[in-house]
Length: 339
Image 1 (cartoon, one colour):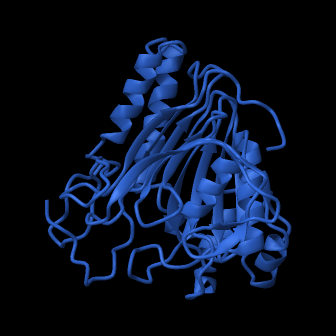
Image 2 (cartoon, one colour):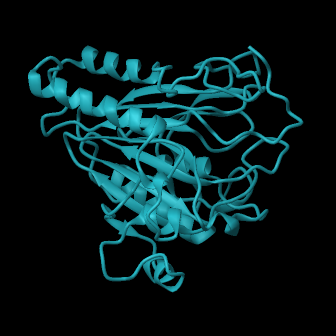
Image 3 (cartoon, one colour):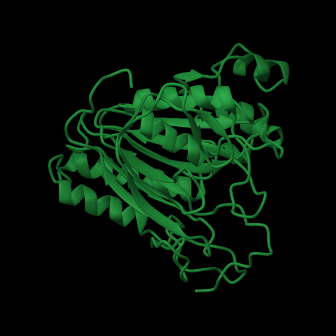
């Protein structure tokens, strides 16, 4: 594999894709979750376990770029992450919550600037360490985003930065969280028996379950939404309220949606039974290996940019740095708590 030219600014991500099929409602017996990532090919990655821990009142937590107040108790987690970064790209906690993140872009991206804040991967790890359910994890993530903001270098030794999208799930439901600017966000719920995928772009349309305070007013003030019809998150913060070809589901996002639709068809015709755990895992593994659609990329392209390669190592090796993960949320419903 060719090594990425470290003197060049990293290209836009081209192969970050996250998938979930939620248990119940005619779907699998256990929630199935998977993610591909396309971090720079010369970046070391590691898989690590962090045990549950108690923390002294008033203690602070050092994330990648900034310190924030620590909570009294954190859950045990397993994480796949760039070695230099505190946060993670994919992870799971002991309560059965899983999650992954994607780089996205909105019309508010200029707000990020150069000020260090929480990275999207920091927000994901914090959500997993603090949330006992997927819904609770979403609450922690959005609260931390509003309080501390997102931003800062997302590459070691560089200044590349981006907004973020997330997919979080447990045994009973899943949520898509997408962000815009430093502190705005929108959430879409994925109910039992349904599948959902995200790629490197905004994807929530009018199915907004909740959003950041002042977001709709901001969109009205900027002329991105008339304040009367259904609020379309992607059309508003992604296209300034205009009908645009980019609003269509296409590319890897379309391919991922097609994979989910095909799985739903197999559920309907009985060829993929709910209790066939091996079958569901095999299906998700096949989705993550789909090179033809671009959901999986191997090695490096001719221009030296990074592409997908599913390996993990504590030190850089050729064709190693991009991560691929496959997880199943616990068949036992995650504990319901305020955590």
